Length: 420
Image (tube, rainbow, N blue to C red; front, side, top):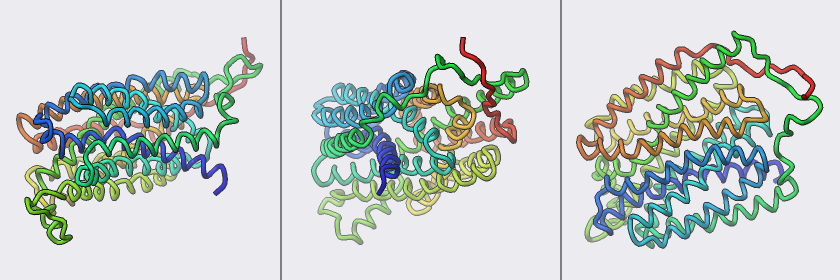
């Protein structure tokens, strides 16, 4: 494998780990801690909220540092920092301590999206398929969080679910440092002090179109973040309630069901969540290739309509039918992820791309954090059926917003001008 492929592979592994670390606690809370610590599921969600605020809050300074110092240097900080933080979090002995650990994990996790995506969109051609491939790795991280954590709960305890990925991340960071050592400090975009720079042509019509598309991007980013967080974070708990019968049948068939009937159900629930996430992640490959061929508007409309359909069908369903419908709405939830990143990559100036991605993810992950109290409140008062109806409404709002997108995106046309 040549250095270029190793580079892209490590960036993809980073996306995998980023989503894995942020969702370990979702399965831990759903399947272990509420029993071990005697704390309700909705109460445990409160302690995860600061971590997701950090996930959003630190995205902008991470992008700024990457543009000013080094994108590759920030990626090394990401790998090693999040690995150490996860290992330390495994020693938590109370909800407050684990909440503090999740906050630090969230701060390091914030680095990846503005920095890693800026590298991907500026280093290689075929932006749509590259973002899609990178996105599949991120989604597999989402899927593996439920699978790995469920397995660790049954075969060593929830603390191992933080320790083992932490060690792996540190090793990946050292590999990244070895590969990109000479590029650190040399990989930022040159500043405007050079003799010839490019300025965007800013006619009134161009700026109006850019403002319109930017508004749609940030609106759909916020609303789709509610959908993504609600589905990925709550799915292990949804399956724990809705597909217990199916999980018990699988355990019986595989011969892993213990005397109490519960010993390895956590593993089976995690496996089913992994199956749904893994199948749905393939939507990004399809969406990425379609973005390069057809543009974002028709693709985004199709994805939003898919979510609206399956969220509307989900209330009241259990076992096998619920599993199939979950695959449907997760196809939409994962399929929408690369679309806004694609549009930003096409519209943003290279010198500020990491910072613009930072702003995009401040919006996205701040909404992710606010979604946790929403999930807890809705679940405590009405259960998951009401949550699915709310998500159907969110999908309808996205569909209405996307209809207003132009058929062709505004791109930064440039003309050389002398620096002041």
